[in-house]
Amino acid sequence: MLGAYGFTQDNHTDAPTFYGADYVQVDSTSGAPFTTTSISQGTNSGYAFFGQATYSLMEKLDFTAGIRYDKESRKLGQYTNYQKDPDQETLLTPNQDYKAKFNALTPKFVLSYKLQDNILIYGSYARGFRSGGLNTNATDPSQVPYQPEHSDNYEIGWKNMFFKNKLKLNLTAFYLEQHNQQISTAMDGINALILNVGEMHNKGVELEVTALPIKGLQIDWNASYSHARYASLLLYSADAGAPVNYKGGQPINTPPITSMLAAQYTYDLTASKHKLALFARGEYRYLDKYYFDFVNGLSQPSHSLFNAKAGVTIKSLELNFWARNLTDKKYIAYGSFGSFLLGSPRTYGTTLIAKF
Image (cartoon, rainbow, N blue to C red):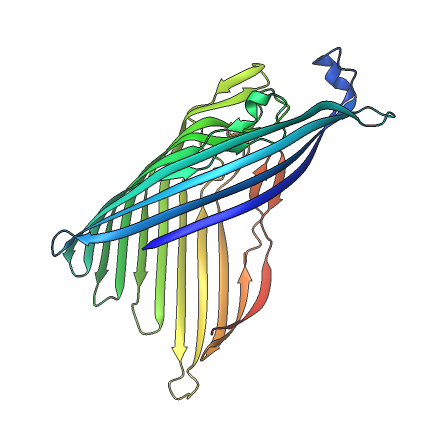
C-alpha cells in the first residue's frame, strides 16, 4: 500500500485581551484598564508520503512494516494594537514575521503469528508525530514557535474466533508515551499559549466480545482500562506565582474505565421478496470519572447512558426510530478554561438511510 497526503491552510485571527482596573495590582504603571488586540495572518502547508507492506516470514508468521514521512511549513505575520477608552486604537507593536518548518519520519512494525486458523497473536510498535506550530497570541517572541509532539506506541494482542465464528474474543494490552506534549496553558497566568510542557505515559487493556447465541441476535461488549498519568507537566500556579510541575496528574477527558454493552435482534421476513427485516437494538454505556482541568480539580463523576433504536430495512433502505440518553442523565460532556458543555438530554429522532 502506498499513499500521499497534502494540505494548505490560511488563518486570520483577532485576539483581544482586556486588562481590567485591578490589573494595576500586578503592574502599577500599566494605566489599566485597557485592551490589546493581537492580529495575525498565518499560512500553513504540508505533505506526507506513506507506505506499508506485509511479508510472510513463515507459513503462519507475518511481518508488516510501514513508514511515513511528514513535512510542514508555517508562516505567521503578527502585530498588536492598543486601545484605552475613549481614545482610538493605536499600534502597540509593529508587524513581525515568523517561519517554522517541521518534518518527521515515523515507522510502524507488526509481527503476527497464527496459532490456528481462528487464533492470532501479534505485537506492534508505531511512532506518532504531531507537527509543531506558531502561537498567534504570544507576547514574547521566543514563545511564538512550539515544537512537535511525538509518541511511542506499543501493543500486544490476542484475536480469536470460536464456535464456527459465533463468538469473537479479542484482548489487547497497550503502552504509550507522549513526549513534548502540546498543551494550551499560561506561563504567566494571563496569556494562554500552546507550549510543550507535558510528558504523559498511558498503559492499559482492551476487551472486545461479540456473540451470536441464536439466529438474528448479536451481543457486543467492549471494555477498556487505562492508567494515564503525567510524568511531567509544567503549569502556572497562582499560589506560587510561577510554573509548577503537576506530575502524577490524570489527563483531561480521559476516564480510566469505559464500557459499552449492546444487543440487537434482527427478524428476517423470509417470505418477503424485498428482503424485508425488522430490528431492535439497545445500548448501555459506562464512563468512569474524568477531569476537565490539568490540576484535577474539576471533574464529572462516573455515569451511565442508555440508548435504543428500532426500525425496518428493505433492500438498500433503512428507516429507524431512535432514542438517546433514555434516563435523561445530566452530565458534563466537555469542559475547558471555565466553560462547560452539558451532555445532550433525552433525545428522540428518526433516520432514513439509503445505500448505493
